[in-house]
Image (cartoon, rainbow, N blue to C red; front, top):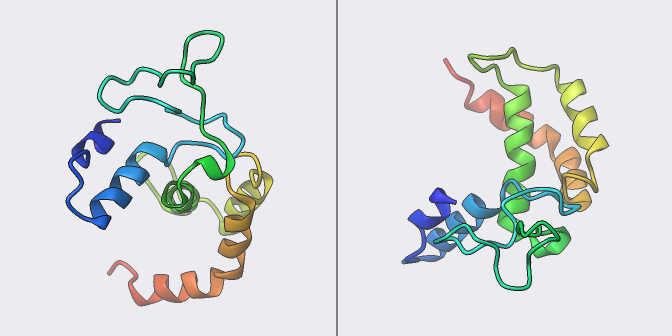
Length: 132
C-alpha cells in the first residue's frame, strides 16, 4: 500500500507500472491474495468490493495488472532460489516444482509456461551478472 502511494502522482509510464507492481504483486491468480480492491489512500475496500466480513475482495485472473502478475512470479522464483539471512537457497528443481504446483492458483498459468520456456535465458543472465 505504501509503495503504491509513493507513485500516486504518476509522472511517467514507469511510475504507473511501479504503482501497479507495488499494489498488485501479492495478488493471487485465484483471488486469494491481498490487498485486493482498496482505496490506496485509506486502505479501505472500494465500494462494492467488500466480502461478507467487510474486507476487500481480492483481484483474480486478468483483473490483476500484468506487471503485478509478472513480479509476483519472479519475486517468488528469486526469493526461493536465493540465499537470505534467514534461509538457504532452495534447489532450483524444488523451486520449479513449487511454482508449477501453484500455476493457476497463485500464478498466471501462461506466465508460468513462459518462465519455464525462458529458463535458459534466465540462467545465462544469471551467469553473466553473477555476484563476485
